Image (cartoon, rainbow over all chains, first blue to last red; front, side, top):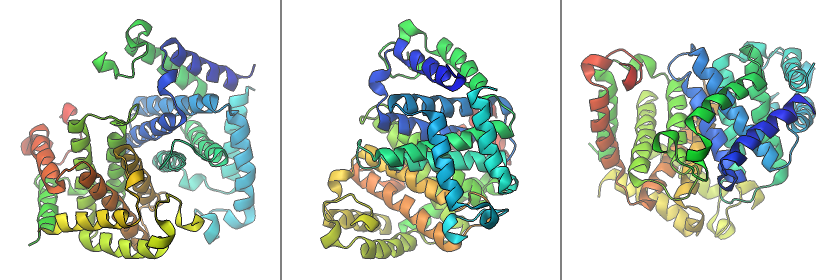
Length: 107
Length: 107
Length: 107
Length: 107
């Protein structure tokens, strides 16, 4: 089994051991992802320099809930990221978007 | 190379091709993760039922930026998730936290 | 002076006394608003029932940073809310949007 | 009636006219606040310079939902902001916190 599927199984097992599946509805996982993402942003609230240890832990929390949500919805994380990249490649063709941070509808 | 590292290289290559690395400071990636996480939550804004296609795409966006941030900070996504799980296992021992959604300081 | 302007002065004075104005750039206030908004959401992370005291305090924190941001950008909070409501009234005419949570582009 | 209560009545009336009260549970309003706060942050995603018109509108959206949430929970916005400021003044005494962005537990 590949590394990503294995990791997804590990985070799911952690929750199952604690009987937390009952709390992990898709909407609650979506809330949890944004809550952890805001804690990651908090590392950079007042400065562009952040405590590396805190950043690492908060990024891990976001990833953990993302993997749990993918598992819950029976999505393959690598597959959905690749599918979205193909879509993004059409919205952001290299020649038009190079060196520009504009949204696709302003390119 | 494992699947996760390969995926991380792909999302990084996508940005490099577009010369977007200049915009992808850690703080900007942290902002981007929370922005995409809120778009994922928006799928569930008024209802616990969401459009599966929209959810898949927004979750992919969150994951994509998380992998870019890991790459930028030279972190191994699987390793940081596992390290944090070990820490969480100490905060949430199975016997104490089973079936409870309480925070560790309230267990 | 009206109540809202008075409150805006009070939150601004609190920061000025602490010489925090140097940290309160518009982008940092925008980060702070989303960080506090996520703490408010955290009250409802696993349940629709929340601790009223915690909700009250987190909502106060969001409002506080919103007023500081308005002050920093020299915006009148009541005026911008009313201007946006006029715009929203055009996007969501009563007859079309009554009883529906759809976005304006799907009405 | 003071300006703030009047504004709160106006945003509430806007929703009532559209029969949106059914969607505006406290948890959904909390989600809405974080969603709008992330749209405000999006104005600053890649740069500290933002489009003033977009900032004004997104800040208005955050404020609007905050006032709706206060109304729904029968909270007085000015009162809760002031109560929280008193609490914050104890956590961040002027002499200790002046010119520092540290959290109260690190002062």
